[in-house]
Image (cartoon, one colour):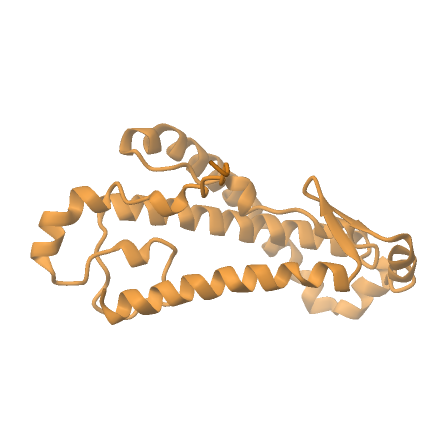
Length: 202
């Protein structure tokens, strides 16, 4: 294993550790996640409602120039919807042919901020838009990453910021022998995406 591979593996391990650490925040903030829905205690909900900002004050405090940018921000929604649909259709048709596991869209596009009682209606709409936009971008990137692993699994000569989730599977730049001899195997190397098998105790 090269030093680059070692660093990429450590990054992956740290990302997993970060996700686990974020889960420990839930009890401290007195919310739970049940059936993918966020639930706060009645006490917390009551306190949150005291902190909500009236929508008129929110708009006024934003400033005139900020308000002027809103149509431009929302104009990106239409191409994003088209991209979302196109990528879904692409992986539905092509991934079974390539033998690539499907990207689970719901793992990238998460709507839960509307459950926050301290957000007014406009803030909830804004948060929903941002969750969708950034979620689609993450979803598309993962689809593209798995596609790249199949068609061109070669690292770049120059540093890439940041690397995607499949980059560690790629061949070093300029290693022609490894590419030619190992391409077929790398195209099938998606074992890490499979859920761990449950211990049956046998």
